[in-house]
Image (tube, rainbow, N blue to C red; front, side):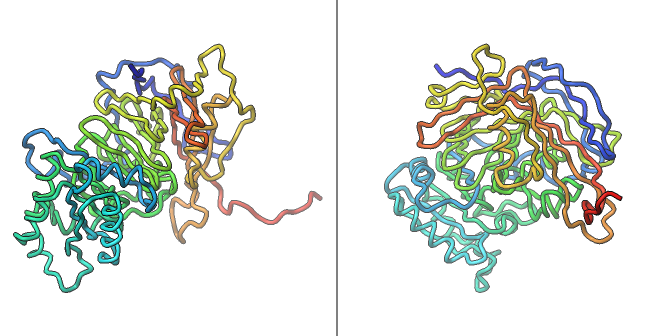
Length: 457
């Protein structure tokens, strides 16, 4: 039996102090105490992100019999040769001969986008058909098409539904305008409830949770407080249920730093960010990561914020990095590394035989860079260092921005239960890292950041 590793949270941590004038104040080191998972501590929301929300607490569709199907959230940029992901989608729908309907709704060119998805599904043995449900089709009356009996019958007869990438608000505005469940969306839910698969890439993954990013600005602007209902945030379609917030293009674009503010604003304790060419397969409370990159699992069950600050901050977020074959038990907040990882090298800082490879400290000048947070986690678990830190700030703040000097210090650090695994069984070194902690604290960065060099007199 595989060991189940609790993804639990210790006592809140103090905010780090950055020299040269910080918004935050210094405090003590973490105690490293592990607490029970049963009742995660409720946390206060940062004042700047305490938003009135029209988003319903429950999904818009009625809660009927238990869902028997699977939801597949793909982080975008899914390669045509990713047989692991494409093959799994078809397998979950019943295998060869499974019928799919494809929605190019989100795409700027829905015909081409849907056609490509149809071809790739058929290449894996599915029978797929694109449906003309997209606002970019000027000749389509969307109000009628989402009630068209013939099209709805095609959805109901399918075993799989696939959403292409593009703008996720197009999907929601067409299938759930103003929060109203259309007959076509209800037909999709019927497929899902009866055991079919609902899959989506990029925008098609963003719609999977009950709350989604609609039209978010840059990650740094979300950190600086641009997070409002109906603008940056909106209703999703809720296929993965009410407990977890899903985001995409995650590690490639440093989106962990927009996920956490949104989770705090909407009361989410669990978040999952899926990277490009990678998928998270949801089935009940179990999630499996498959594909070419990885995912970041965030637990805010014992995280805290400093209410006295007037900008975003968080302490004691617990984070885990997962790759191919790793699983999450959402109900238990537990991570189960793949069997191949468990046969590989165990990296346990508390073990007497821990011999980390890295010996030098590191500081990341752009914590929101491509794969930066994943690289920092992999480095830290295989390092003799207790923590690694990095910055994020607006290099070119907008004219008149009152928060032009606001930046953020990221501190990732080990705790008593931090552990990792590595393996080269897939042909390149892969990692699973669990139970690291993350603090994000506001700091002041003087403007301009630099000037001409002048020799000493």
